[in-house]
Length: 268
Image: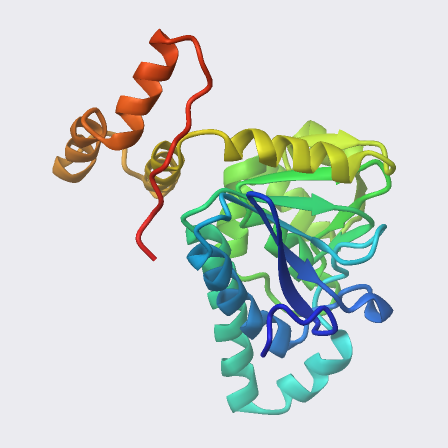
């Protein structure tokens, strides 16, 4: 798949230091097919390998959309085949992991419906900004299916077990204000400014040391996975950072009262 082809259901583009992972199936409200799930890890990898990209924004190619979840019409065919059930499960898992484990910060720009698997995509980003018209729901109980454990953990990490149960056990649809109140998203903006606000925040992160962000993101993942104190690895990273190229630049820039020009990039 050519991920630079804007006719594909998943494609990427870059604007300055921002890389965009675009969902592009507007006629189906970006309902996710197995092929789209399978494309996401490769698209993320392409953005990770682009040394000019510092932050990744997940969004729809069309205003007013995010993702209505899984393509229900495809689920019937998947359910009828043991091989398809497994390949679809793996495709979803690998897409979620690719977002969760991406070495660069990720931000979901959410407009319109963010339902089921679409919500799962947003949950695995580092941050989620939504428009006032955004709607959220996790609806497997309405279909007699089960939400993946990884998605469930991400949801619990954000909103706690009681609110996670409230969403999962009812399949109810909530608005952006309620989603913000429960911690499902990080900010709400008017429909006319959501793109500008998301990109401004992403651009602010892009000015920071990528060495710092890369390792602190991994530290946060360790904490969420249960680690509560340093081990030899994290202690070594903390000490080594102080003699790194970005630390030297950051300290000099502070003392010289200028903006830092950080140059570290992760190995591709």
